[in-house]
Length: 487
Image 1 (tube, rainbow, N blue to C red):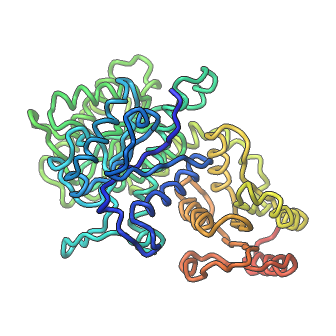
Image 2: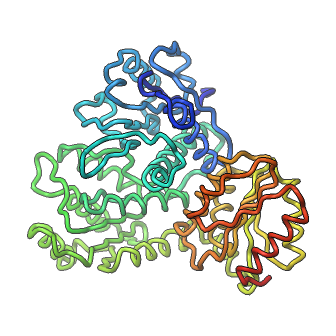
Image 3: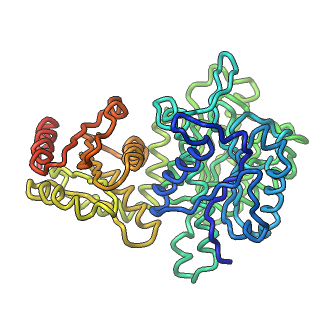
């Protein structure tokens, strides 16, 4: 199958209302998703919009890899939108990976959603006031509020779409290419409601380091169906992570055990069957703060600690959650897929300050003078890679984010949104397992038009803006001297 469309966004016309950017909301969403996917994939994606009245025939739908329906009451009431959804599902093969990602622009209960979308994970892109229940849109994707509440959901969506694009595009390639994307699978168990956010943070970090994280869908509400699905997916995994907090969790129909309990039991059974325990490892984290736990939850936790069969092949930890995350990094990231990257780090001169220059391929020539200046001053200069397999390019970028002391975002020909996306990467750098503080961040822009300085005021980033080479070098020297970092 020759795919021509990476992502097709289907929406109701009523949802594409104007925003602060003077574009429609869905158009802004498309632009932001495109920027996110560039960061994840390392290349531009072909994203098309399809409103309810656009005539895209079924044959054209077959050329789209991923469908992103923007769900709202207007979408549900639109026969054309629902027809697009049905037509796309008809193009999917039985063994296809997940290729539909539902975005909720407005709150919709599962019963209000189309049947085929109910089991899929949703990405809530609306703002709800907890006190009043009022629901509003983000009309500016680059505000501090949007960065805090909206960007992380978009990061989730971008990484999940990336997984689907890679699985589909490389499915029929020769075996040596496929092996690049054959990654270890990890079962990250569903949690009680009190740990959902923390579970998602761990999920994002694992995905960024190349792991496939299951389950990647909503688990069934029926106990038998749930057990079958969990058993199948745990069998695909070599590692499982279970977070146990104060909440006992949802109890599926036909059972008196919670989903948290059932998943732990199935993982225990798999571990018990294996002669070589190294084939399947389990980490169980129990919150040290259980003041509000129910009697049933406390009994469940005690059974985990007491019953040797439930802890077979498992490491049980009752530590602060941040300590547990560090253990996960050690077990899976530093001890697993990223080991070859860390081995290189071990040979690096720790006394030399590393400066990571984040620049785009179109600025390779323009940035040479900055790179030369830093190298002559004795700094270890890190730069992005632009040639090679996409996953390797991403790994190289992650390694640089782990290792730099000082970061410089360079802008010559790229637009301001590209710069904003790179500042997002720096904000996320601690999540890649850094073991040292970031000593300084700067943006060097040699464009005629100035960046809006107020956007970066709260990001602790120094702006160096000039078209004159000498002025840039003098301000860069002053920036490094003020940091008191030595080459």
